[in-house]
Image (tube, rainbow, N blue to C red; front, side, top):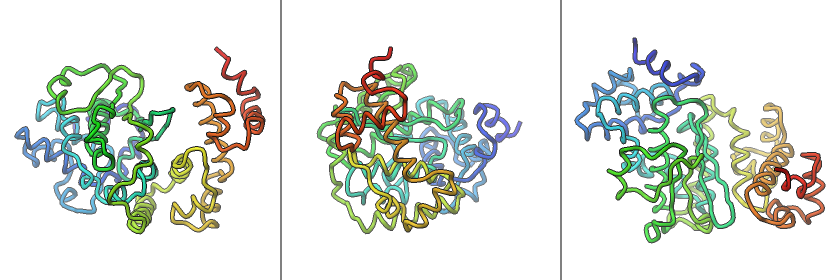
Length: 352
C-alpha cells in the first residue's frame, strides 16, 4: 500500500479533493522533520515514508496538502517511536515558524486583532482546523475544531496546535510573568506521555469536551511592543492574495465572521470590514453576493449565535446581553431575538 493510500485509509472520511489541495506551508513540514531528527529519524527516510518529494520541501514557496502533512506527522510518530511528538513540535515552534502570518501577529495593534488575523487566514496555513475566539466574562478562549476527521493524527495535531499557542503567547503578552493564568483544555483523556512533559507545559485539563487555550480576557487589549499598522496591512493583503491563489478564498464568510468578533459589543460597519479585508466596499458586497449572502445577514447570524451563547453559558441579564451585542436597549434586543427564535430571551433561558 502506498503512503498516500495508507494515510487516506487511516484519516477517516475526509474528501479526497480537500486532502490533496496544497495549502500547508512547507515550513511546517520542516518543523516536523527537525523534531523527528532529534529522535535520530533521517529526514530522507521520513519524506520517503510519507511520500513527500524532497524537491517540494526544498521550495521555500512550496505547499503541502493536508494529506501530506498528516502523513509526515503519522510517520514521524511511527519512525521516532515518540507518541508525544505533537508536544515537542509545539514546544519547538515560534512566530517565525508561521512565516508571513508570524509577522502579522507581531505587527497587530492588539492581541485580539492578532487572533482575528489568525482566524481569517487559517485556511492558508492549517486548512484542516478552524479556530475561533470566545469571551465569557473574565475568560477568553481560543477554541480549535477539526474541519474533517483527522484519524490517527488528531491528538498529535491538537497537541502541537495548542502547545504552539502557549509557546508564542509570551511574545504577544506578559504571560511569562503570569504563566499560571494560561490554561489548555483538551477533549481527550490525559495521555500517558503527559507526565514526562508536565514541567515544560502550562496547566492542562483533560476530558473537558473542548480544545481551547484559555487566558484572561483583559489580555485581548494588550498591544504587542512590535505593533505596526502599516506592516500588518501589507501582511494581510499578501495573505488574502495567498487565499485567492490557493483557491481558498471561498472562506470569505469565515473571514467576515472573524472580523465581526474582533471588537466586543461594537460591530464594525461594512466599510470597515471591507477595508480590513483589503477590498473596496463595492467589491466586498459583490463577493458576498457571489457567496449567496450579504453583510446584513452575516451580522444578524453573528448576533444570534452570540446571543444564544451568552444566554446559555452566562448569568448576564437580558439588558447586559443586549449591551454586549450593541443594541440600544433590552427591548430592541428582545424583539430581534424573538424574530430569530420565536421566543423571548427570558423564555429561551428558562428552557430545560
